Length: 617
Image (cartoon, rainbow, N blue to C red; front, side, top):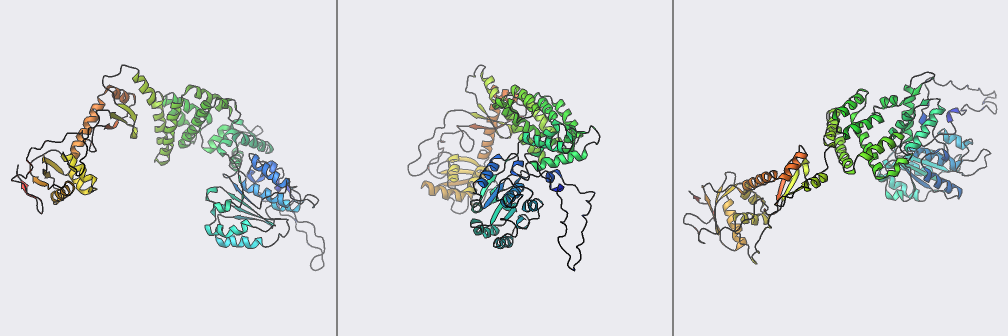
């Protein structure tokens, strides 16, 4: 719904008309007296002030203008698709269209008009939801193809009283696929006396084949200023005094929905103090909704951006005692942060009446004091904090931790400012590692060294010069299990191509030597000997890579620039250090080892065709 109704159906006389003739057996018909109204009967504001004409709709100027022109030139579509969030007037608009199509005027001779009279039999029947030719259907409860067949069957019959039979299907996106398919033909070529009006909050779930057969109207959210004005008018008609700040709070909480806002206003009227000077205050509204006062949200923002954790927590404590949800408070801070960023980016908004006075004054002051990088950093932290609160077992504790983190980083420079500030000093003799933000709140230092010198690959067959080359060659052949064992389960004792002496760990497979020998022989066209030994040998390649990574992190942590960054950002850590000279295993490139044995098998080694031979050190 989107406005104030000029006609209140509750004030209409629904008593039966006097008898116009004798009764069935010749006597006068008994006149039944209307039953007294139930003492608890009450029509909520959302129903009492439901719009009855296009002029009553607010916030939907484009749609109203199009429909008015359509009725003026007699170009009314046979099907309409109304979409928008809840409470903006979709069903109300459908009923107004039905009245506009069937109004006959006060004298009974009128035709379709964009301004229905409201007094003819058709207008009264549609207003009271009891007209036989205006069929409203809830697709959420009637989703099947059989329900659509009933609608299709009903279109074959002419209206009983009205000029046009109107089918209003609410939440049409809930229909099943078969139901949509059954409706397509009738929707494309309906009888001349039939109109369809669909309403949905999920337009993306409506098949494109249905959308292409309808005239679509997107009902937008109603602006806060329009809602505030509307609620003020309704409060005056209800003889209720409401503070302007309370009206702003109700309009903000409505989130663009007129119906939601009227429900909140109805609740506020019900819980207000009764008296000659009774007034609905902003404090009452915020307490009723469990919200933080708007001024309190600004106070929290001031405290957080000033690094005053104690002040921020004191404000949240008071809000929590009044019943405010601190997760909602964080969402209010997000909204305020967005408003402040807009005020900083678009200075003309400071003169706009779309924003309440408090946001145009205090919000502009915050926009002048805070930079865009600081606002962006706070936005990211709040966005993550809201998600944390939703999953935390204690919402209050999680929200307070988010605010403390915000206070902690409020007076800290952004990474860009810090790098520029540190770069203004004397440059180090060696090229420093360049800090870049890393995952998990850490920083990654990149070590710039000499480029990796690689030899030209052999034109025909690979010739591995180191044991790491052998392991890499196995990895390139997609031998995943063998490659993994060579990395983690094998110690190199001696490398003298075509002989490799290894000490396998117990978890290594028994056929590792024979498999490696066969694979190398196939790749290099040279017969290799893989000997097994009990000598200690080198650490595994994985162990060497881990040691090299620790050494790089230690060297990076000793660099003055990295130390300055870690000191400026408490809790930051070095996640990884990338060395451009390292190979895939994190080890520095090394030249091929000179063979320390001739190109023939040693006396104590054996070719591995079946079982490996053990070699004592």
